[in-house]
Image 1 (cartoon, rainbow, N blue to C red):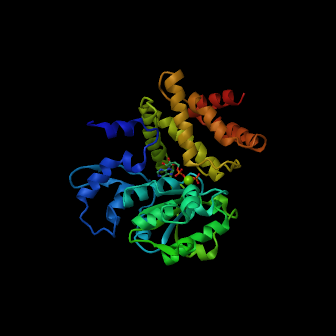
Image 2: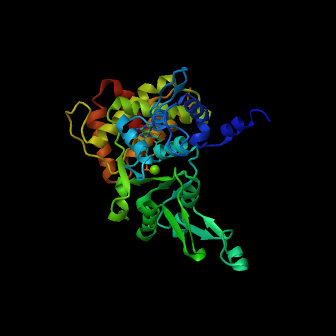
Image 3: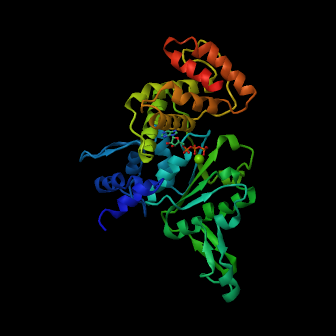
Length: 368
Ligand SMILES: Nc1ncnc2c1ncn2[C@@H]1O[C@H](COP(=O)(O)OP(=O)(O)OP(=O)(O)O)[C@@H](O)[C@H]1O
Ligand SMILES: [Mg+2]
């Protein structure tokens, strides 16, 4: 049926990057005349353009996916073209997962080869498992083997993603060492090995806050190039990121666009940045920081929640009252200590700002 794939993409709650941005990826592939590493869908230059945005010679606009230093993206993309794996490191909500998904989509055209790291991730998820019915009936054979996403990526020369690498138990992590240094995965039961073909590489993400949970062994760390994703450098950058993502999310939730919402977004971002930094934007007043991370990702969800409130129970215009409860929820994670921090911020900073009186009232109501 004509048009069916698009309909399906529209129906899926969260399409994969390669589906959501299929048009941009195709336009980039068509315009891209630079050399592509083996099995790459695009050249490193085009992958970086896909992530950072730009305009192609034929006028096609590539939307920025990642807002941040160009160099960070260039180093990340270049790493994938070498024999070293890529580790994206950063505090929560700095777009590590987001960047890794878009990298895999742009490089290999498929972001679904994914190992989700948890404390319970077993070796089968990194190497291979067995289909026990077949194993018992016919003994070990290639048919009875269930390849992990890593193994499939090695065979097909694709990018595989490992999320939250440092949550994976150390012994399971270490099974990656042979894969990354020898580029081979032995299958002793069959007396065979799977050798990675060109194009294979691995993108892992790890959270700064998990440091010490299952620290990477130094042997494994040496196999990675580490790229640290920073928090947005300026308030304007952060407002831009939030506005962009809220717009995209709002469209997928059928929320009306909120062109007047930008002031409210700026206010949420200002509150988050000031509390995170422990000082007001003008540098005059020192503040205590709450226990939560107040990440960009949380600002995005506060604003999206506010937009939904405005759409369903207000007149569609995002106002202070729609975001106050969300801001309070994000700041006050620990009901005792964080509440004190918030009260102090509210009374010494918010209250004193002339054009913030609506927000001050809304926050007091939300806390009551
Ligand atoms: N610099 C940025 N540019 C574009 N989007 C960003 C940026 N920072 C954060 N985001 C947005 O924040 C959201 C959350 O990002 P993501 O889930 O990738 O964070 P994370 O670093 O993986 O966090 P965690 O450590 O909690 O897993 C995404 O929707 C992403 O679009
Ligand atoms: Mg993540």
